[in-house]
Length: 105
Image 1 (spheres, rainbow, N blue to C red):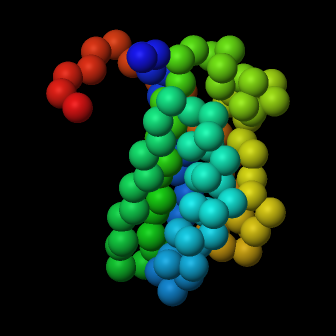
Image 2 (cartoon, rainbow, N blue to C red):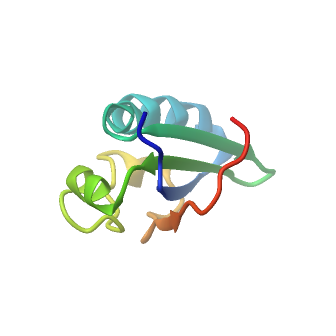
Image 3 (cartoon, rainbow, N blue to C red):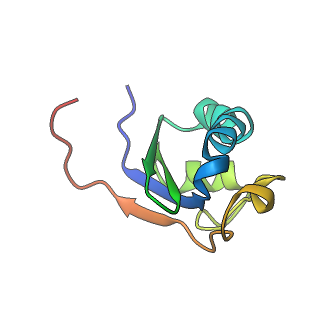
């Protein structure tokens, strides 16, 4: 089994009234293709009073495998077609972290 060495973190925010619709859209159009390429994917949601934040963390063997998925620069954002309709603002970057230690599941 290949161990993940890199985590790619994406964050986006919606208005609460469209959060459920965005979550479903994001899963179908964004997360499903990611699941096919990354070693693992986690999605998170935080509902706040005035906004809902979504966080997606994908895990990769190395920068090269991530670059193949993104088509070049692994830090480049690939916006989904309807992101501009749902998100409060389009994210301009992702966070790429090297996994130093992993404990537990």
